[in-house]
Amino acid sequence: MAQVTEDQVLAALRTVVDPERGTDIVSLGMIAGLTIQDGVVTVAIEVDPKRGAQAEPIRHAVEIAVKRLGGARAVTAVLTAHRPAQTPPRGATHGHAHGHRHGQGRPEPGRPSLPGVQAIIAVASGKGGVGKSTTAVNLALSLVGLGLRVGLLDADVYGPSLPRLLAITEKPQAAGERLAPIVRHGLATMSMGFLVAEDTPMIWRGPMVQSALQQMLFDVAWGPLDVMVVDMPPGTGDAQLTMAQQVPLAGAVIVSTPQDLALLDARKGLNMFRRVDVPVLGIIENMSYFNCPHCGGRSDIFGHGGARHEAERLGVDFLGEIPLDMIIRETSDRGQPITIAEPGGDHARAYGAIAARLWQRVAAGAGHAAPRIVVD
Image 1 (cartoon, rainbow, N blue to C red):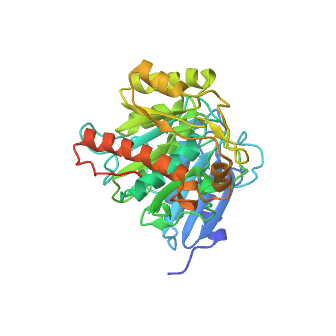
Image 2 (cartoon, rainbow, N blue to C red):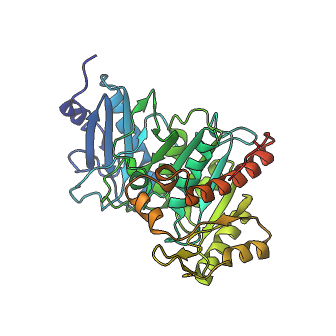
Image 3 (cartoon, one colour):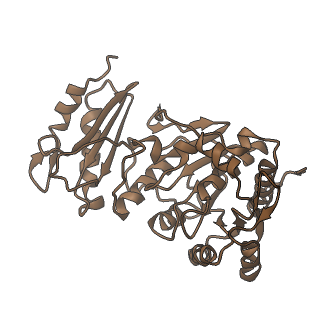
């Protein structure tokens, strides 16, 4: 089967009319990006941010028009809102595998939301800058080290970190009518950062964020997983509510640094999950202390023990503490997390101990037999 060409796709897109303005979307300059790679056609459609999810019929019409051409293994389309629609677009972004329509992916009561995914854990923080993404990646890799089948979803649409933390530069490939996750170190991963350039700002309103999360959940061939770790964006906004409403979370882990300001925001995040009936599995204290690599002296730069005390006060588990160390930053920046770069080191053992406690809690809650884990 001959591969479809860019000219053929553009011709098909000229048949898609914006109902509000009565002109085809190509003439209106709404095509923000178009790529064809290995039979996968990707189209980004620029819309006015004010329209939000109301422009969804345009996205669906684009998928139908391109599929009619033949010659494509999969068609991917996403709405973007980097600027008002009438402004000439620059850059490119692309999103989900074809076939998902809003309202059809919402889980029904009593049914698993993601077939084959046994448990979903949200890793969250009340504020940014506390090392949540680094923690989520190393926890997920530590769970892989326990012999589990693990997925990692980067739900931070505005500031995805996964491509840098795992040195992923390739694009996801089609798996039938869905996208295949990118696998690193035995970990199945998906991120909006895989689909857009690193310096592309995601200037999206809430409905578009919800749409992107739904697509990364339901339009990805996650396959059988024992656990999915979700790296949540900081705060208590649309992404958190979308995850709580769309999938049955086994629980949430709160990451905080020891100082009072971070703990105040962590408390808000914890209370948000409680209000939407998501169990809080525990609190991790990141950047807990600093050991000088030269003199060996210890400094509690952000204080110490605040997260443990907060966990006791709120009646949740304290899962453990991770030090502030340059090696964690250096290995993360080069895309080799510390649990991979130094699997036998003290930091990897600290993450491994937290992952073991976390999995034992999740397995017990799900009725699975928790593995016997010995951490040296």
